[in-house]
Image 1 (cartoon, helix red, strand yellow):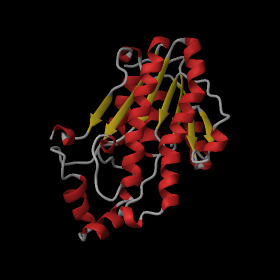
Image 2 (cartoon, helix red, strand yellow):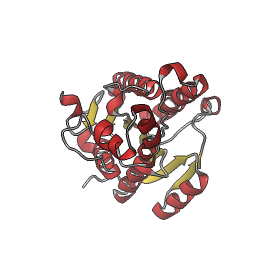
Image 3 (cartoon, helix red, strand yellow):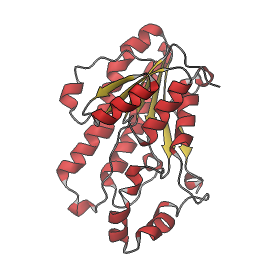
Length: 248
């Protein structure tokens, strides 16, 4: 068991899906957990259940984030959204929003967290990337661009933080059983001209050898290990949970 007693973890998008699973895993390991989420009510409910703190925040408001300071040992950059559309019809404002939320906000939060981590000579930056941080799929220009950028940001953080006891890693799952994935089904079905049931089989699971969705708890288990003392030499890496997709 990973022991996180005495550690403080901040999890963005922490009120549901992968973020909630991470928050629960960290709390079970003894960490104090801050749930950062746009949904203030959901964040407050989960924080109360876990004995943690809610941080209602719009992470797409990057101007407001520029002045934030974070005193935490573990930062999980998880918050994200998806939009499926061909490039020629992709709304530019939506593209910019997705890059703010999934690339600029992680940069600003890492920037806010590093001074206290450096002072303690301990820190864990865990970026929830995606198999789409390593591979591309059609109709996901903003998501793929943001996740590829997050991979680079994570590596630079690893290089700068290493001498200060700070590690930075990405976790790269394929499609996870979350509301974010379920919300893609209608658009994917329309764009590919198939049923929503066929989207799961013929699009989401097409490249995976293991033909099922990833469970949020499986991603949280990787995050928990990366947060603990046994992963002190693991940094600048991308850890796939993709059923064999990137083995191709």
